[in-house]
Image 1 (cartoon, rainbow, N blue to C red):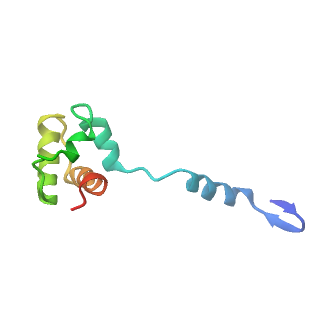
Image 2 (image 1 turned 90 degrees about the horizontal axis):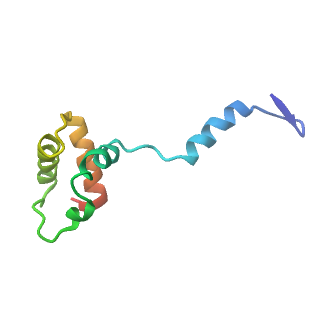
Image 3 (image 1 turned 120 degrees about the horizontal axis):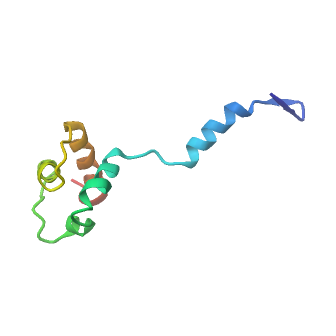
Length: 94
């Protein structure tokens, strides 16, 4: 403990919140997307005029299909949901 102008300051209690505030929380959906999806295509496919995805359910189905076939990864339902959420929030807005 350090005394500053008569006030005790506990630095160990101040440092972790400051460090946490300076960084952003990681997004598992974005991390999975960036690691596996952009190796086949960029983000331009999400804004295409002729995109096949018209609903959130279509998006989840497409994410599952691409993960299994194009990326050749076995994602859990939670991982598929995380990537779907990321894409929906970032590009689609269903």
